[in-house]
Length: 228
Image (cartoon, rainbow, N blue to C red; front, side, top):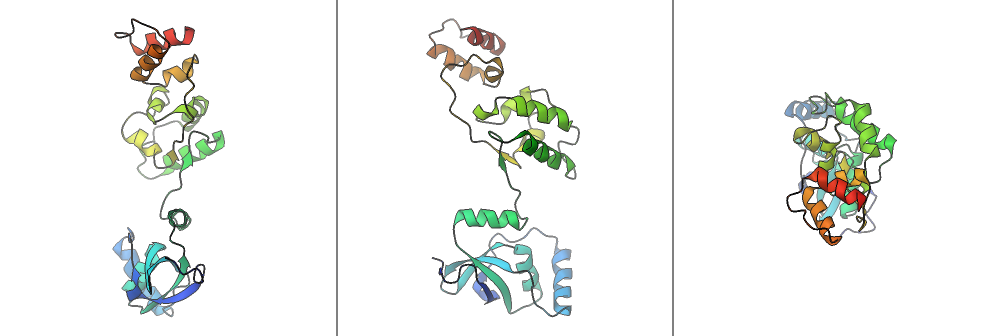
């Protein structure tokens, strides 16, 4: 839909041609005070709004939503914008680069340094659910775990690193996502087996032709599969 000749261009667009999109969560005070300053200092938004084209002379904000809100509050007729393409990838990059979304890294493949930086970032946030977590312990145990096979973050709660179900585990989802490798058909590594659920362990045992497992507990299943 985007006019390819406009992509990347700085354009002075009328506000009534622009849909604010998701808008901004900035406090009203910041918007009104910034709008007052903008009017006092010449009324030009030196940092452009990022928009995509949605129709003929129609656009939608995909980045720098705060600047759009300030321009609207200031009563500007036109606002300086950069035209981006309408792909989802572009929208994601724009929101991250404008600070409107937190970037996520793939925990399945992340380096130890990346995990450490992410954990320390979460701990440093105001009212963080991870305030009581010891970063060094959490980083070491997550890094050493067989996370390349995880389909969920649940195995982290079994690492005894201070991260439990609920708010602490949910906090990790702000900065991590998972893209796991296929699980090998035969696994004897105890650490990998411990990270699997009881139902997954029983399914694996059945595939190996092991019987008498219906009432087995997880620890017993782990020991059995690690030796078979």
